[in-house]
Image (cartoon, one colour):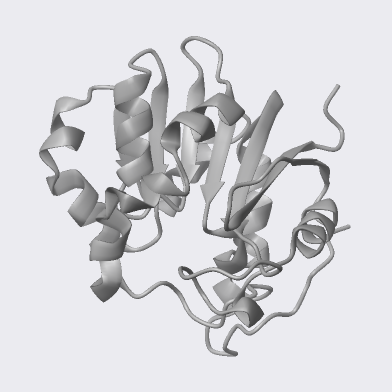
Length: 209
């Protein structure tokens, strides 16, 4: 049974039922997602180390936005198949238009409608700065994407720390709140060492062997 947690989603947007943050990220602020100064407090090298994908693994960047981290990961590990998933056309249009995307044969941007073709196949799912935005349906899809021995890495803004960046505290989770929500969706959760402004949770399907 899923724990359907009611958040700030608007009644006319059922897809966001359960989301902590009331609204989706505003595409007009997409420039912030392209700002690589984020690497100072959220270094992609460590994100890759935490993901620790095997050679030729399939990795889904769930909520990739404009693809700043997906592009970095695809370039750093050309052996990986990196799927950059986002629900907002404006984000994927921006990602597809980048010269880096067009030059990386191992990077593929997709819309949520294409998720069924990847269910049960993802060795790794990266959910970076998106857990607070995910409704119940989307969170169920994260679990469905995972291969039996795969895991999802949730890296998100920490409500318990003072920070100059990110959403208001009331729109994000504490690490314990996040772990509880994931457990309610059939994940076994392990808390890892976080970043200055982010917690890190490694989540596997509870029935994995």
